Image (cartoon, rainbow, N blue to C red):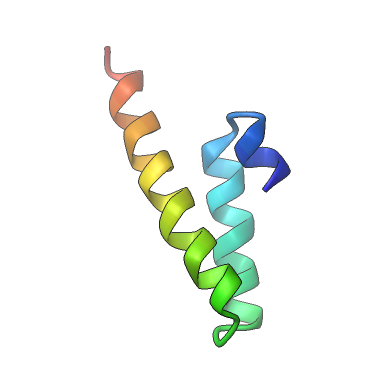
Amino acid sequence: MVRLIEGRYKDSFDLVANANRIDPRNMEILDALELVETLKIKSDQMEGF
């Protein structure tokens, strides 16, 4: 989540996705994964401008 606050969306997504692989039943991780994925997509779209 620190990477997310720093604006490092790809790093944040990679770390949360890895945490999800380790503990796929953790609801906090699943919620964070959805948020981070959305922000990563938006960030990727903004890079094209």
